Image 1 (cartoon, rainbow, N blue to C red):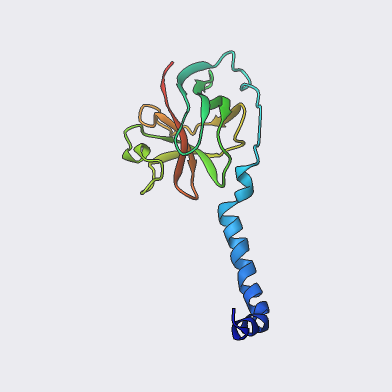
Image 2 (cartoon, one colour):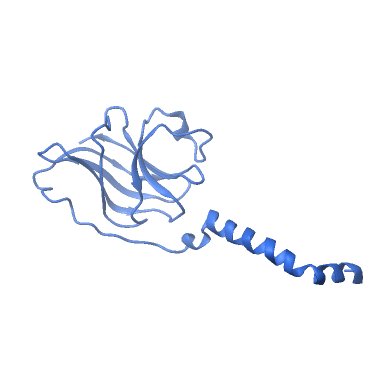
Length: 168
């Protein structure tokens, strides 16, 4: 570097740091790189009254953008409440990962990186990226229509993995 460029940089290093630091913080927040190495495990017990619950649907999770495995099953309690249970579940961690129900006929599910919005029923943010977990299903979820469980990164529109549900 020439002496002139070094002089310019040394005079303006505070301006560069004032601009660069917020850019680095924003990039960290958007990508959350530490989540690539941190695994969160939860082991929730089967729902109370699960002995009385009737299994409705089940399917094996397979990976898309990230290795994903386990079983997704939907149970219905005698009072009509339905619950999705993930067992022996594992996937990669990431920012803003959600569990959703989608239609198996949705063309978006053929892609790993979605180009348009996924027609879905939101079940919430993932509790952890490993272990047994329970999620309540809204009464409005039509399981004859929304027949696929999807592990979905909402921030980057990426399908981590999915399971096509079949009748038990």
